[in-house]
Image (cartoon, rainbow, N blue to C red):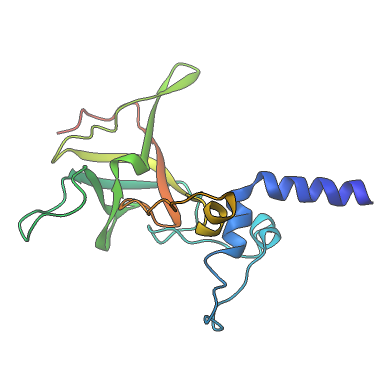
Length: 180
């Protein structure tokens, strides 16, 4: 019985993303109206995390969007990298585009029995349509970790990062035309 419990605990610790999701974003001092979710709730499907596309994470869908640089017309922004502006999910237009940074998009194409990662046609103005799913995880260590480690400086958050990030992982259809 104890070894079974240890196995479960080891599994939970090895899946830090899920375990962190159960603790960090839902419970904070002063946020009594927040719900708590356990890692087991996520693992068993008792609760479902909805991604930025409005679908449960890990749901295959067809997305369409356009690569764009951030709009600098109203002044310089802190981000200069290309962003994928997803405008359609399963052929339906979104109310507003959902943006994914170039480092948040992983695209593969089928090659024989395997697959190889390839460029997501990341060129300003290039259109992209692919079968994809959104996945999420936590990035970075909490400030308390660095303080307990004795680090004199706690790393500042990147302009690209939020504590919980989602990414698109997709497959370019084999008959897809080259990006425009």
